[in-house]
Length: 403
Image (cartoon, rainbow, N blue to C red; front, side):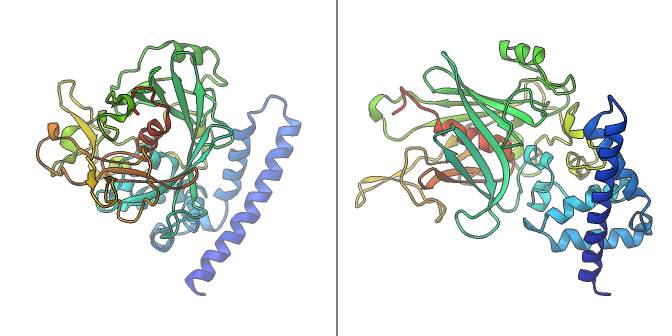
């Protein structure tokens, strides 16, 4: 039997077991009042899978099979097979956690926690953002081809919420539920009234010992949570500011990003950025058979996420200054074919001079327009997809005193 036939046989059996487990769990919920719906469903499916021949494979053979799956399915949508294998049973989950590397090393986004982990050191993750003006929502996808925009693989969604004195962009793993009380809520971007200063808040601690921000919104969410397991923390991870530029008299926008959760040493040779390993105390892990929320992130150095020292210098990013093109009579940046429409929103971020002379020309995040309500977003180490998405959202916000 060929390797592809083996994998297909496994998929068919998993599908049969999944349907059987789902029917069994539904029957159980109908007869047992007060049962925990999603948890009992997942537990029933896990029990059904644990007793199959695939769960009893010798560890050496199982590892060889899963390594081949990981190597063959490097891009979405075929990469969903890797996620499916991780949800089979405890034995498969344990090996998959060892096989699948964090984006920093592999350059791949596999599990949802990957969106909170630093991007690849060697290479760039090419994504794009779709804007819906009617609903004031934004959707982040990762490209699955070399085209500027394709069907893509959905990553994150954000919804704009206007308040009298500020604006919030709520960020979620679920495009259908972007409320603060949702178990898929992972953070937000908040702006001041003028749209010149922004703060990125992570709903989960970005590293051990992170201090939660005491704000009124955090207290309100804590009182109105759907579930007591959903965290309502506001952990500031970035401060974004735009220089005042009334009527554009000082040229293009100038922005500055202080990454409060990333030390300046992260961009130096041998530097490390804190890496989240799981979504703590969340309903996301109420599905014990689906390990989408843990990975090998902490295995790279065998320790927990590093705690930045209080007096350690923070990474500062600034937009790369464009050059004036005499023939075109406009400000220009080299986006290497990834941006096709001129816009005041386009930018490239590099490490500031405050962080020393190293890597000053290396673009860490670039964002630009390619069509009506369509934008590219490319990022790499040391920022994560969540942080990059939040920074790009700040470019969408109205800036009364900056243009």
